[in-house]
Image (cartoon, rainbow, N blue to C red; front, side, top):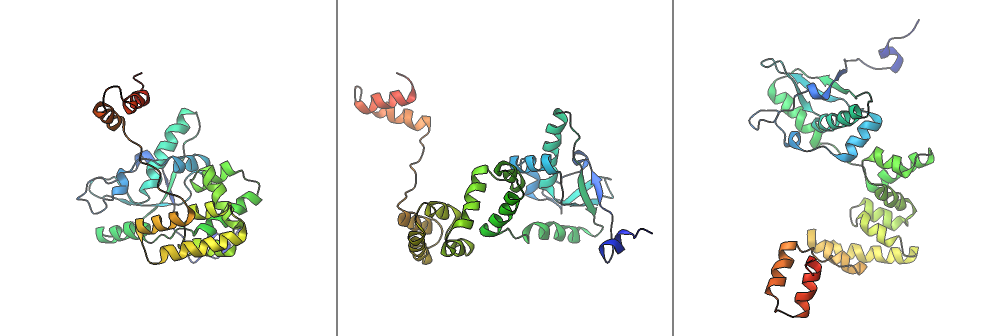
Length: 263
């Protein structure tokens, strides 16, 4: 005789997971409402839309029923709903089956629901860079392409390549990245150097950033790598103003006119 799901998985209990058309869910946009969150006003995220189109929504959202309006309100999972709506728009255009969003209902007072909303987002911890690289490597070993892995992780193919490169870095580099002492961008630049030089540069980068924070730390570490902040891109209005201020017949005015495309 077949076991029920509680016995089959050794669970202590179970509850119903419901499935919704994301367009029929209500995102609270009234700032005065206890369930208001600015995430409800964000646009869709292209990487997440592509991920949902490929895999669907696999993490349930939290919903509740508004007894006054009868609407099904999203307590947690606004991003999944917003991106599922856009994914479904594209899937329907292609004549494909739209995805549904799994959800778990919560019945409590407004303070309790607001607490669920906050904790669901604020207590999340991201993977460390090296931990993320190890996850990506497991997909590589299963034969997934870098393009497919990029969709899974919601990033660019170039990011997959640079993240995987961390696994080939010396231990000193990996430890510094894990500790937040240097960034993945630093590790990417160090990868061009022989291992011994990488270890030396890591020590210099750590020393440069030890007593500073924010922009000062970034500038100090760029100096160690011999890089500078790229020049600011000027707007057309700024270039036009400089052109108009330059003396007639000057080389600068002619050059700026060429940039503007007026000659």
